[in-house]
Figure 1 (cartoon, one colour):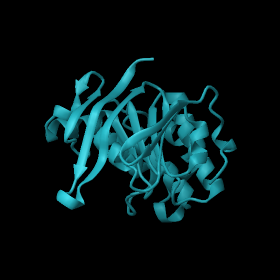
Figure 2 (figure 1 turned 90 degrees about the horizontal axis):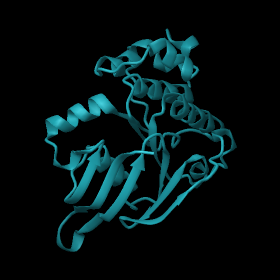
Figure 3 (figure 1 turned 30 degrees about the horizontal axis):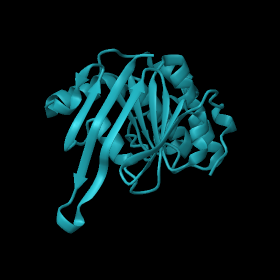
Amino acid sequence: MEAIMTLEAVKKVYGKGDTLVHALDGVDLTIFEGEVVVLLGPSGSGKSTMLNVMSGLDRIDSGTITFQNEITSAMSDAQLTKLRRDKIGFIFQSYNLLPNLTITENVEVGRYIANDKLDIDQILKSVEMYDHRKKFPFQLSGGQQQRISIARALAKNPQLMFCDEPTGALDENTGKKVLEVLQKVNKEYGTTLIIVTHNPGIAAMANRVIRMNSGKIVEHYENDTPIAASEVQWA
């Protein structure tokens, strides 16, 4: 497998003096194309900071981040914005759907800003929401809205998708259905997924698991046979 992203000696510090916090303390990591990677750790472990610097939403203080052989940590704000627009997708715990737009129109928003676009009807079928395409967000359950947020992120055909606690606001059954959609996206489109979660059960569906604490990677292992999302032991 080819590397899609690398982090070398990455550091991120917040505060000064007695309030100094090493959110990332010399992190080295390589992400490979087509992987499902789960970032685990308690609150304050650095996993959300990792997501922010990897995606270019935040700057590092030292080290190097490379995406597809380009040094993103040296890019200008305009270059990072273009990178996120063209090649990176985001899924958050909150769905962030536009309430006055239909489901199709919400997905079209994600598709409109990119160059390498996917077919909306096909995407909605992939996330099993095609029959709801004319509805508005308020007419959907939380799990259905999260599937639409996945479809919107997928519409621009990103090479890498960051998922920040995508099941955090969902119950077990609904959460597993959302994870099934993410697993399907990875297999059908080859999208590399990085899932940030506090739920250790989700780790079993990943190709690799990165466990963080105090800004460092404290455990790093591979799953030879990732399980189906429907078999995840909920925590």
